[in-house]
Length: 307
Length: 170
Image: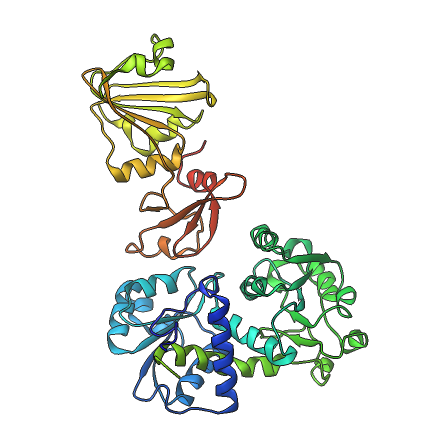
């Protein structure tokens, strides 16, 4: 049977059904257990980063190489015709996709990946478009939750930090709403989860609650999903005050459930202290490593009728 | 069926002094109060030489009050009708020929609008790329509020936000 993601564009989590998600996670798990070097054999993938993102780009390129494919592309737009000569994105995409079998794109403008998919002659995978979508991050988050908890259904998850601008938490909350998650929100008022996401959760009958402190939620949850509170959004005094409220330390983890894992999309600045890294609850580096398997799964499914 | 314009529309008849009949053209009736001016702006009717009669806040059985536009020598194309339906989703269109209503239909909210409104999200790719024509999917939420979702940046806006951003304030 032809897999339903074959030759499709991967642009937005909102387009995934539960069946798609489960197929991607199953494929990621299989590729982690048993590497395949043939799934992109003879394929050339364009990896075009119109803004820099070291981890995402390197994990996509690693995934392509591990599946036997080859890569062309650029790590930022500064030395491209688009960046230097003012070429339109549409023209750039038409040319690049005439060379390649698929395109991975990251771009600072929201909707750029959709535009690329509309004009490209080959499948397009969104590696992040502004504050909008980053579906491969959501897939690696879901894969890591599944790997650590053995299920996606009825996960108790706390999102901590910048819930207003953090697209990772928006997309993950949206995806987990298909699986009856219970969501705990911990953030400063000025960085609270946007109302339209809360409306979406209400529509889906997802239970969520708002909390003042990290300590309140740590004993309750299966997943503690930390994010960075960006210093540039606050004045120095306010930042120092907030920082002290949303920093996770090793001492705070004594009441955590045994199965609880700490995730973070990284880069971590100082919202998780270094002494947490050795705690068995810490899982963020393994989560980042899982990015390769989630991206392998997406590429493999898009480029192969059957796996 | 050809029906006398005034007998077809009692409100027009009762307000004959306010909103006089036209020989040929279109009557847009049952416009939500305040929207007539936005329709005139959107279709740039004020810069043209057509004979236009506008009624604001007229009494209406259905709406309580309504706006009405009568514009001579204008008919709306299917795509213009769709644009009109975003501004006035409950309006009625009367086509007039020789003072008679020759066709009458209610507007329906379209599923999509293409190229009619700019996206209010300043970081949307449509503001950078001339070839990215703004497109919105149209829906209503549980309270009947019209929502517009950008095809590109996926942001969902209340209709009023899109209208305001496009200089069509209510």
